[in-house]
Figure: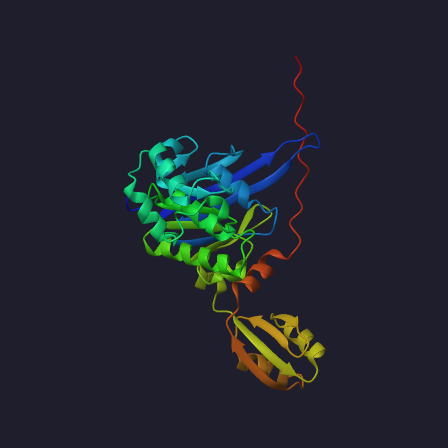
Length: 318
């Protein structure tokens, strides 16, 4: 299916975990599309179902309902047909601490039938070629993460999946990981990354899916998610009164110590006119593009929709 634009297609995905209290709905009818090329951010608050979704995508968790297609193949039924074309770092991988980075990769390459020549290529790609002879135990956390990426790339996957890849990394390591994801996308791969560092992610993603309580609340190219909505900084003598007036006219208003931050679908001259109609005069209005973090908070800060309690599964009797 070379003409299929999606590396990952998820429709109506559901996962229910049963327990003695009746169960928990971790993923609730999720829909998601990940393009064949580019970095796709998978965002949601803690407990929103991101890791569970990734584990279902990789066949580590059985879905309760819905469909998943990975490189056109239904998962889990035909996962073995495409898994060799997928690389994933879901949990921190294990290497032999007494061996060098290169030796660890050579052993792994031999075990999966990959030519030793590829080891040098992936070490160069992740920037470890000058440190490859050092023992793994001496690596920094960022270097260990890069070696994990190198191991994932040995089989030259078409899809690379990262679940919280920057956990525990210092700012330098986070920057290196961000650059690595961009490099992979620029080489024609689909990169799916789940992370809570939204400010960092905004610098590298091409598209995003935002979920809340196991459901998708926004999806698409980054520019489309941020939208054409104007974010305006408004300086006005009576900010509380001005905020009430603007909210009544459909603007989203955040009170800041020295100004109002106002988001809406109209330009600043409309806002100024609406304030003037009630005798308020802005001393300054400046426009700027909203951030992905702001958009994320707008979509996920509201309380989750209450879910009906799940019935306790009947106990089996002998």
